[in-house]
Image 1 (cartoon, helix red, strand yellow):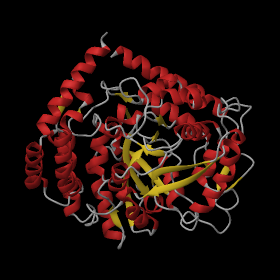
Image 2: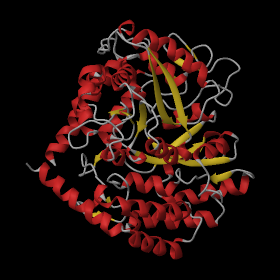
Image 3: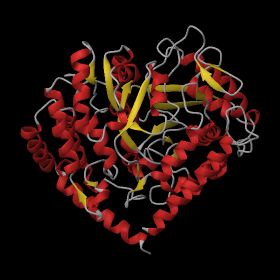
Image 4: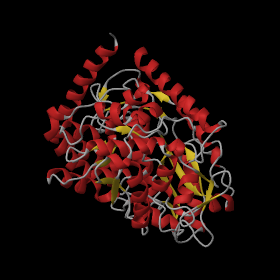
Length: 509
């Protein structure tokens, strides 16, 4: 494991250099190093015209076409390409993405992540290997990320996607409405245990009619996020590693104390009326709409430095955050946001040229992330953003909240409500994280793909309802576990243990 720890520290040092460049002199308009490696792409005039299609999970913004037109003007000059942005709602992502693959739909770039079946899609050959493309057309991205960042996202020593430069660790917690925290003099620092939240939620329930104390969705729920970020999911969560145990044993997450403690707490909160009753079926965008409308007090999120400010800008509601677990670095975090090239792309070279620009060109990344200057945002002489006069987060035609998804996040502007030392805090956040002993392990589900599919059906039936406290875990959790075993969970865990044991041996050489 010393080898893996050394790799991680090298990655952190690379990030430290990048972050230091962000705060020094001689920077460009986005605050990133002006000496960043230029694109190695040929001049646009030397290339045949090509239309790129990029697919990613998000809602469709009203002004998407306006932003797309501006991107096309710029990309035509840079790499003689135009682009079609193709967002898919988060709730429909799995079904629509799978349909695109099975129907051999032509597209070029897809957002990929460990939690969106990245490993499985690589195994199925849906994403192409990009090692040579990175060397020829993505050198700027490689120089920005550094070799260890690239290595952390590889599968069997090869790259099938290019990771977003952002936090290298994951945590979880809650975001609270700032006005209600102030109104009731709530001291977030005094919250030490989950049960400390109970009187706070009770106060909101009693004194704020029409406000749900804890708004949850099927995916953004306290149980799933807290346990998901305190255990190493080893790719898909069907068999996890409890990093605190000190061993490399793969176990069923539903049988760990970390899971059962919180799921019983969640049931008590639900019965007390603290949680929306439609939580299992509520989609993330619907949850956000409830918060925008002032109908929720708190909701669970993956946390990082400045998460509250980011979400405040996105939702137009001032929020404050409380982290509940120490950040952890796992392979899933290293592959938590990537851009991959589809096997159906007619021009993978041009696709890599675009990906490269997202790491090296501040104008392009800020246009994609925040829209058109003067219309969707204004910035001052220090490149700090605000909404234009008369425009809010709710009324803006382009406020997708997706800066964390693409390219070099360190090249993005900061909003006026964000900490000017945000990137320095990212560095400290990464350094403070605990490191999973399985960091670098990539799970291959090929040998148990039928069991994984069957377990997925069971998870769909039970997971959201139990995690949100909607159904009684005393009765339903044993049934859920039994059905997973009948679907082949024990076989999945055995196969994952076998692969993990083999991987451990390679780390000792």
